[in-house]
Length: 400
Image: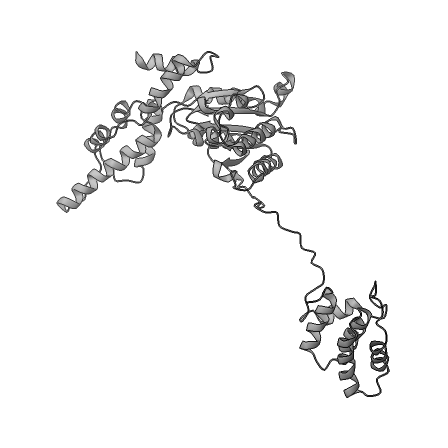
């Protein structure tokens, strides 16, 4: 290989098309200009062997045999390089590439923007939760005149917390459906990336997407993993992710009007305190295990497509206090297994009955007990600011 990519390209082209005399003469001319007379003589000689009277080849032969000319600073004006590239495009690659260089570790992220068909009417029970959501989000949106009068902006953040499996994600979808707003759900796997700076860029792209679809409910699931206390983080890269999240919530690089940030966590005590400051996730809502009407509705939902006979949903709901929605789904699944096992043993199909449901309740214990054991310590010994007063009140009521 020489230090001239153009000469190398033309040499490859001549080798592919040895009978193209015009191309060979162009190559010889460049070789003479580059001071490579010996190589130019060979090409000029091959042209003269086929066309002894070719004047261009004779002049090139004379120049090559004499003193080498200094390297030319620019190609001869007689050469139409654009026409040559077009003519030789199937043999010689283009001299310059106009494609942008890829950025290492960054993908152009696209986030799924949904239109939720679920509303708060589909949420059984939870009247206190619904009232709080109405005041925090739905009221200002539905009453623009009152919003203007009281200076309420269409922005803000609400933190949903409580034991796992109690419907925090379902509530977020219901809020979006009630508003008629777009819905974007995000988990930690959508943000984190091994390349430095890519996680922060993914987070920025997410908020940009939400701003572009306003009004939009942006749901940040497992916010304790994405916004963990920086004082407890050993990784500097995770601390910068938390910093980026704070910046996006503040709307420093963009207007967050019309972007409603809902976050969910099972461990609010692990969230960085800066995320809970005014203007960010400054309001909290405790999502408790479903009450009796909600438990009955959840049981009915999970039994709707199963063969059922004589099941008293009210009695089952009474027996499942402190069960989460996921626990209740497990109860229905276990009762179905009991009935199916008997049907296989007897050879006769029978329906799921009340006894199957009660047997399943006795077998499955509520998964929320462990969470409340931890939450009790927080409410008793780490509630100086009063942010867990609602949790403390519920635990006191529950103990009675």
